[in-house]
Image 1 (tube, rainbow, N blue to C red):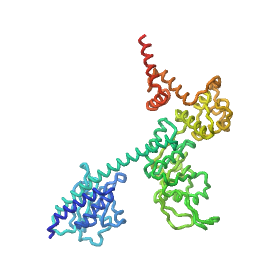
Image 2: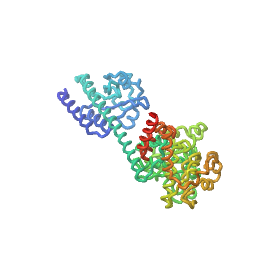
Image 3: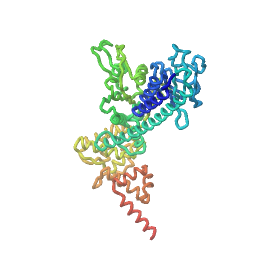
Image 4: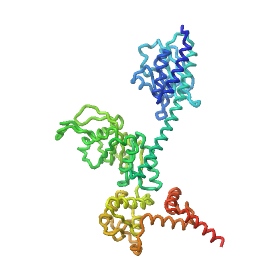
Length: 530
């Protein structure tokens, strides 16, 4: 009855191969395959159901002949229905009449009208010897067409689908690697050309840099954790600059600085007449950030009564202005920051658990400055140079002043340091910042603080040398002294300075100490022989 069926199947296979070869993504390729099965071979309501490791369930990934609603209903446990059986056994399954098969659940609800007139075939999609999904079709050929022929044909199609899924995964992995490499390159270019970058070579800050480079190219929500002043706003800005949203707005909102009764209209906007004083229509900050990034600082202070609206923006990417019933869809990436323990706020019912989970997708903890003291010298040097550019003055710390700053705990972190350096540069009449001058111009409450620049243990006899060295010279001298104490062995010197071997190697190269190390080792060898 179907004399050209064999030829039809060969033509269909050729078309399927071409569809897969030309497809730019997995979804369009699978849609193309299923449309060929339906239109060329009358295999209707074809579906590809794949295993989702995140949910541990099977869900319809692509379909032909199903509405969006029917497709969304196609979710199965691994032990549920015909689809679950095919996945678990790794074997094809044929249902002559779906109305008489108790395992057939019709969860999509797409076969109610023609129930009793349909047979069904499902075959596993196998990759590397393990099932990764199921290919299902409704069979409407007559009994004179051998079921085994259709099963064999669908097994070939399922093999092609499995190979394409494997190829697609490799392409996605490679694309992710290229994105990370491109992001890292953009970050290095920004650093060298005076753009935004993190000042600090401590292992903790190197890890922060690695994390931000990894997450920047994605669409993931990022939660920045750390004390006030550690640089969370800078890191949020860097993430935006390294993302594909760079050319779009970067909107900053401090949730703690806006009164609670104004925060809702500030974020979500309002229509004319929405409240007393609303004489016009205004976009909210979320709408202003459309296509770009919004940074919600001090998210731990976000009012409980507004958290459901924020959760909706995170989940659904939609909102309504105050005084309006119109739903507006927005494309915005959310970055948030807090110096509070959100988990503790959740336990005290001051923060929604579901919102916490949505914000905490990719947390980055920024360490306090007192926990990465090896970065202090570089930061002081950075801010001195910045103030030199701003005010046209080249400034230096005396050794005693520098020692005091190295001992200080910096409760206000990097922000405190920047403000202090600017104040010192403005107030100083000399190019040298001494310990006495430093103590005299501390912010209120700092003088005499334990571990502060006012410590008495620092000798003042070193405070007025004939020649005051720059921070770079001081750091070089510290590295040389550590090398000498460690027998000119780099990794031992690195340990005494709290540096990694890589960081030590960078400093040796930066200060041209290779020949000095070689000479020092040779001198030690000669002394041993003598």
